[in-house]
Length: 433
Image (cartoon, rainbow, N blue to C red; front, side, top):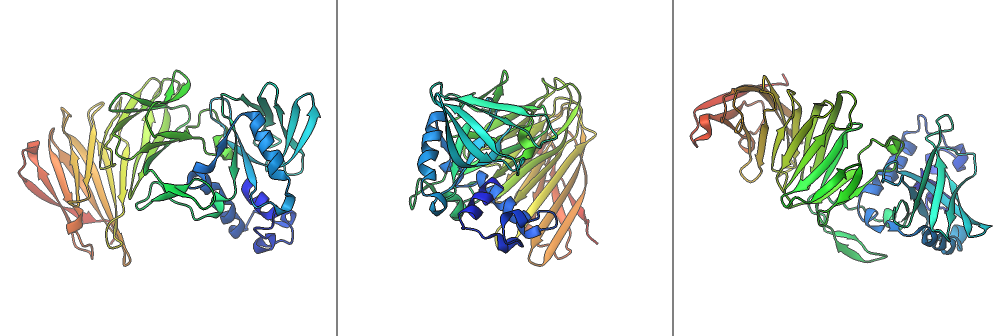
């Protein structure tokens, strides 16, 4: 809303496209076209070139920059949104700046439109002498306000220009992403990332690479020691909670382990973790984390292999989705049950061979698993699945590229003791009949 309001102010987008002669005439409820437009501009904060064009400077520099940016008025080629965050990087929110007021004594007010207070004047106060800023914000007038403030070191006040948002956006976690943004008309290489999203209030997250370098929260503070990695708080109403985790980005090619730590929890909570990389997505769902419990997710550099090891007796769901060749995509679902306490779930995907591997290597007791596979193409969806019972050290091979769908059964091969020989073949049932 902060971005779209500025684009409508400068005439780059017309309100009559969404059912109103003026912006104030627009209704969001029941207006799907407007809802989609707002969602689009919200999503650009996570994509390139927009994400790489964010300006993070000292508070006094933000004031000086906006003074120059406002001089052309409505004829300005570029507008800006202001991002505000708590000192620890949480609670991201976006507002629209439209004027600067000199209040004297080195105090300047950045006048902003805040979509939570559409009919009230709002201001971010900046002391250019002390290089500090503050803003009293709230989700809506009926919720107690929270004080946002920062200084030169916090980098908690930033500006995002509209120009890169108006360009074609590049997906850094998709296959084929090659360019980014370094200014008007200048392209730059884009680093492919594994993007990690965590949902679970109060869960402490730490990502550690093979060299022991860390990304996440340590002792209540956020750290980033992994070269090329970054972290960003998504600006939206849902992220105003201090317990919300940001988006973590780790360059493809780096092996890492994700630890979900319940040290700060007061009661059991449900969490999920998702990772999106070039041509694939991984998700661990229905994680039940108790106070003090630690679960780990070991991820291969290209997302092709993961091992989930719960710290207690639980059975999360694992979902892997991949972009296949010839517009054929696949989704794999694995759920372990009747597992030993803390037993690992090992899933590997060999996209070159077209093979999914499920093993119980590292476990001491037998376990049972539900496995389901979906095949998606222009003709529709094929879904097959079934239950598999495995002894310790067994491996299951599922050759999904050999499966052509069309109602034909999907077979899996079981290698007892993982000695390299196939001992049993099992057919999975058709789940769509």
